[in-house]
Amino acid sequence: MDFFRPDSLAEALAAKAEHADAVPIAGGTDVMVELNFDHRRPAALLDLGRIVELHEHGRQDGKVRIGAAVPYARIIDELGRELPGLAMAARTVGSPQIRNRGSVGGNLGAASPAGDSHPALLAANAEVEIASIRGTRMVPVKDFYTGVKRNVLAPDELITAVHIAPATGAQQFSKVGTRNAMVIAVCAFGLALHPDQKRVGTGLGSAAPTPRPATKAEEFIATELDWESPKPLADSVLRRFGALVAEAASPIDDVRGSAAYRRHALAVLARRTLGWAWSEHLGGGRRACA
Amino acid sequence: MRVNVTVNGKQRTADDVWPGESLLYVLRERLGLAGSKNACEQGECGSCTVYLDGVPACSCLVAAGQAEGGDVRTVEGLADGDRLDSVQQSFLDTGAVQCGFCTPGLLVAAHDLIERNPAPSDPQIREALAGNLCRCTGYEKIMDAVRLAVERKQATT
Image (cartoon, each protein chain N blue to C red):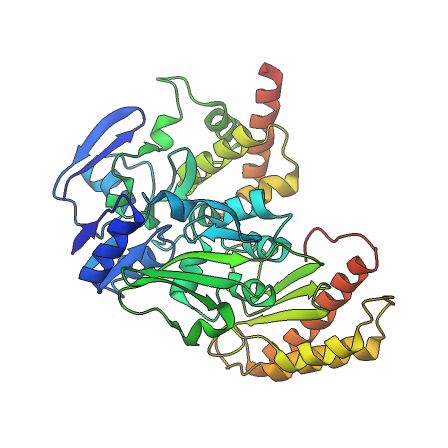
């Protein structure tokens, strides 16, 4: 096994172009598990730890650009105000040790349907910045996932950043698991109010072969919400929204939960998070955490 | 490959390192520092927690080559010579050590918590230690130990 330690993004992209089978590694929280358990023996590891721009965040064209290797702990500490939904999701990742190393770029690279950041990225309409020696492209996150642990990356490409518009409205994230820490989601739901666009963004996790938005639920709620003179939502509207979110899922039965349980739980999560977010929009104050 | 790393303030070199092996393996098997424990090898148990460049990490999830040029502080580096760190002494004084396997990771995690937060609440202590499993289930004594270490630190500052 080779070990490449590029000092710059240009060097990393050149290495990836030359060694398409090199596995990128940043925090190592997914890749090293596969190595430790002999589930994977890549020809090479491509260490992204030295590439400064992958570990930085800043503003670009009005959006927050988060380098692919910025760990969850820094998203929580430094970006909670601009990106509350992603910060909430980040708080539910693993443990302090894992949040110190794991990153959104890694979540996207692994493309597990259970990745915690996906629902928040979908709800906020994030875009994934992907680079190769051929150039850079931007892919809306809803088009990024192509199957279970599959994504649109070509063999010579690396995820370099995600771009997310700062929140213009309340955001929420909720996740079902057996305890608060170290839990892979049984199912998860992200929600973002976009008052500037008069719409609501959604994202489902652990509920289908890929993370996905609940498009029909988004269309339904867009017609129900009165953005000019907001009023409390009728329980029937919250329940209809929850039912449409559950319909958007195509979950499986597995050791973590049955498909029926996941559908039921998603309807509950969707109803609650919409209620919390809309109360905040009405001026009821912000809930610190779901 | 060769890996150069500062461990507990000393420059160390490991040779013939397989690029896919973990920092934990380098520490235990190549540098003879067996304090950090190897259990789950998947970041679930926290027994291998070390400071890497000042940040607690599961050393089983760091590829050896990623630590090249880095600064590692293990449980062996908490004490000042024969004088135990206050967190270590508090674990002893409260009986927070049973079989002892989880203790090194918990010591590093608790040490980091108290460095960052001089007055943690109980929920904050629990959250900070959520990545460290004790299968003797001695959590109440561990909570006592961290509270005592906090009190002692507050008394001396």
